[in-house]
Image (cartoon, helix red, strand yellow):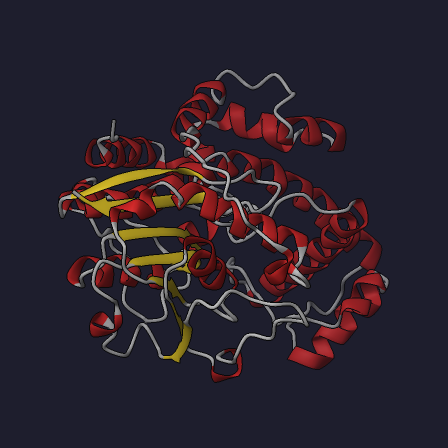
Length: 401
């Protein structure tokens, strides 16, 4: 039985709206969040956590301040999405996946296992949206013995498939170099075809849904990602009427939060990121004091070895490279201490904000599902693989009623 995505997106949107003070402002950009004045005891509790307590908070193992417990419960309730049914695809023979990296191969296999049953709703060609070299589209065409069409913008990626010395199926697959955002691609989608998009960034997934609905496609399946990549200066707005009715306004900071979780990293990488972050916090502190402007002062990426420099030398290089504002008198050791403390406090505040990452991502994906349902499609939305394969594991699967 299909879920009422129109109702669901409204529910998620209302929870996000009612809890917006907890996620709209980003620590590190704002050193003092607006909600701290309303809940000073909870803010003081977070700012007072030591490193071990902060790790336990991040892992969900620390008993929460009474003010924060219902906030996390609300976020967790909106984070739960169903697991989409999968049908293991037979015939994933070595003619295709030689040389394809393990995680990519796993994502493609999980994607196809999720759409295997719904592809029966059409017998036309398989179209891969923004295909790159076309791993997903080729395998879908070959395993279902249907012609394939790969749509890709980058000419360097629109190249014939090299079989790596093994025989490939005699199923025609065409690679067409087009910009799906700018070109008129509606007429390119074959009648009764299926449009597939694995990790369709930002506006690309919206465009896939629009083109699929207006064309003769029978099946749409896509996993949105990178919602902040809108490829235009137009402000974000919900696609569905139900999404717009929530009144929820998402700026670039909120869109970035929805994809902030990048999955597990090795300990050494986490430590390097921590050092890099402390260095940036330190430079920002100095700039705020030197200019008298209490606003975030960002700078472009710096060479990785700079992260290993002592604080004093790091700041001097930043000042020389970016003409960075620095007070006349400052102590590198004192600055390191202050930046380390502030980094820990901002990370604690950021854990609370991070509780709403998945609800925001769910709202964005479910809004697309609701739009298709409003247009009369039969729609499912949920996870198509484990987060260990990709944190962006939400997917919309739709077919014409």
